[in-house]
Image (cartoon, rainbow, N blue to C red; front, side):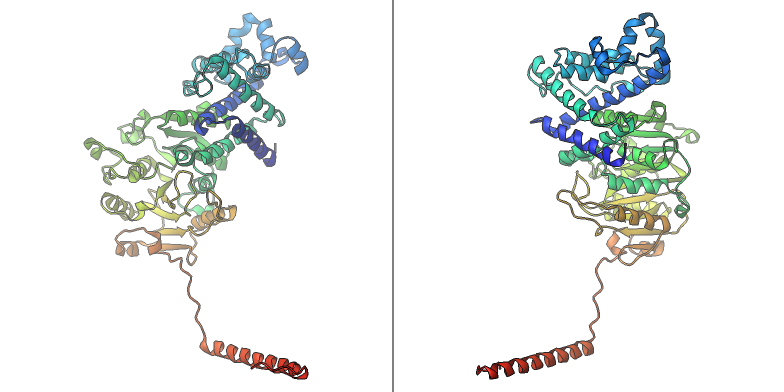
Length: 540
């Protein structure tokens, strides 16, 4: 499926969502629709694997013949004819694809129940979600559908109303998908498109789970370039990448897309919101990331409650080649007194309660490899605010850890209209300066959000990669100058975006005025000659 068809699939599904959700909150409808799309993916993937496993024993029947048998899927026929072999088959499926879906719970059967408005659709769907969660071999699937409440009054007051609503939703999704080829990768792209569309409709709440693709492109490009010498190009492999505020996982998937399906050893993410955490796991699986290739943890990053990150032995501490993050901006937190001795903060200091921006930054930086790269999105306040934040910023600068400061345009995010920046950090960086990129004025204005074009994004990445300087856009600033500015990183202190006023040559202007006066005199004299012939009074 080409890019145009992939986008059309996303647009088709979004049009269905927009039409069917009615008065339901966009976030609630998002969770239902994305879960159904995910079930379609799991079903397609499972049936492909089952066909390979069963080989010539897999029933091959046209859909019209299949439906006449009373079955909605070929696997259902095989189950009915080979009951004694089912345990061995499912054991193999758990070993190979790490989950099992019974034929009655496969998407094609669910879609058929929706088509005929079957009264058992809702209960069948509930049983299917529970079975996948509890009977699958790997923990990746545990609790995956825990926040999908099919008994919610938001779907209807009674079982009958809820069942009818689900029938209409699933039937329309199934109809929308029939116009497109059964390309599993395309479902991943459609899923990502829908996440973006739902984020656009969620306003400020979208900041919890979505980083705009254009900003994600910049971060993913930066962390995949060679850390010591970016101009040599993209690294051949990343052993590990971490996003400690991963939301729906889009940023991590963008890094994977740049590195290729086999370019990353393992992906790690952490997310506090349970619904968004489930969304991230679905998103990984939908994009073909095997459950052994990623680990998403549900927990609080600031309190560091993920066991693998609490290793006290420095020799065993997990470290990552790349760290990316778009944490909540200026998040209010309440650190305990004991946190002052936390290994993540004790060398730099504690971020103030009013803004946890530097707490998030230091958390990620602590787990960065010596040769790794970290790119984090933060509000501009971290560049110049005083107090505890000034002390942390000063320490990072003196130790040579802040590599690049990139100022982005305002109104790029759904969650806020303020301009934000990207800080690039390294534990071992070669240049003894800081690169400032002022990209705040380089964007296309949109109706709701401003947009970065491919050219804008490419310019930022190229400027970072080759450390290029350009008047009113990019400048390399020595530490001596930054020190004289009190370790203030406000971009406008180092790059002026004001246009230089053009010098006016008075002699040239005077000559032009004389020439104009002469032209006016000649034109008036010629006109007066015509007026005289006509016996009319001349112009003065």
